[in-house]
Length: 244
Image (cartoon, rainbow, N blue to C red; front, side):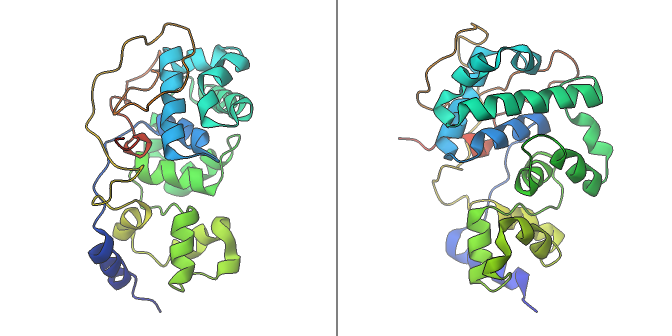
């Protein structure tokens, strides 16, 4: 049996302890996760900023021609695949809850939230776990390439298990209070996941013209839902690019 708390303490002594992230609306984190597929954190931030500049609400994103959404996120890669996927997720959320947010999930048990998220187009175990852990504060361990690599090198899971199965294998091994700490990057490293203080949205929001992808913002605001409370006042720290 592995002593997970001791392993975690050793890793944190070497790399530093992760800092808490600003709160972010679950729907914003979900869209960001879709944008992050097969690209870097920097490009994810730029693509999310492209959405923010081109549209004033998630409803506007869902109702726009897919090509216009794709143009807004072009710098993130695979835009022609991700745009209709994001729109399908947004429409499914509105069809289920009658508005563009996932606030109702706060009252759901974690297994039901996970099942609902994984029933959405293009959402797998990693994306569902990230939304649960980062946006909802649930004791769920997201397993990406890096977490999986460290885990099999430490002998926690067999290498042949793969990332998807590793979620189920690691979850019972890691104590609840350690899962968030195991899944984020240390605060002492200036990486693409480094945090930044929240700030005002930049000018030009809602202009309707997709922007080319430039330097990622230090902080920003996601498109709002036209109904329901605004829980997107801060930019997900995971999406903030490092200073150049």
